Image (cartoon, rainbow, N blue to C red):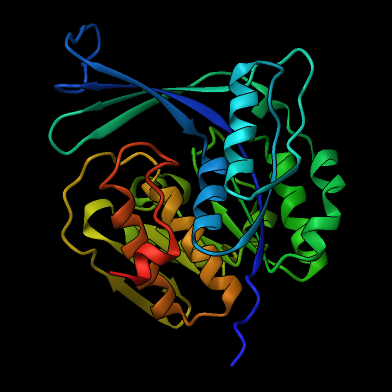
Length: 304
């Protein structure tokens, strides 16, 4: 029996270089924490999801923007090294590449993240539309809210025009409400438990997820951190508990979950199998440092 071709997905989103401080504990306002260890690695929700999707076995194209600096050059090379199509990841004159400043602290490695203004903020709807040739061949288009909403809306429109599934990781949560027409384009939304409450204005995760379904999303997966994730559809819900792991770095775990869910959706996996596989992948990702470097490969996951 011949192996089916790898699904094609397009990720529209951000690319950042993560400047990370591993601290004994997360600093409180006004506090300086000494003895931190510094590291630099590739990140950005869009780029993270592109790498995770490629390692999950998909053929991935990345649509984003970068500055004419060493950070952008390094980010592009890192994506290329994963076999990702970066034809639509151009330099934006006069803009810096994305930078994120990350504090990790405590035994559970919880994080605080600050993101600088950058070329990510200049990704336009026109640029997304110019990537129509790769979107036309995609089974799934993935986006987040770390780039302008106009670009995200165009990604949703182009996915619909191409007959591709649209996956939205609604993070970071915007200041204002998300356009209701955008929710109606979403085949799968992947908020975490805080995001679903803020987006919906509800007081419980269950009610928040149902609000998103009522708004038009066809599936909602809420990431619950170390507790796992729950999938909601109009027919009911499923819960997946993660395997026990030693946590090293939680940055990028949600991006890993989103990407593996998108690949499973592109492959036509049933909801239960897709949820359990994605939770297992996200759990594996937190056992290693770095958002992108920690993403597991399909061979690792299938090898146990």
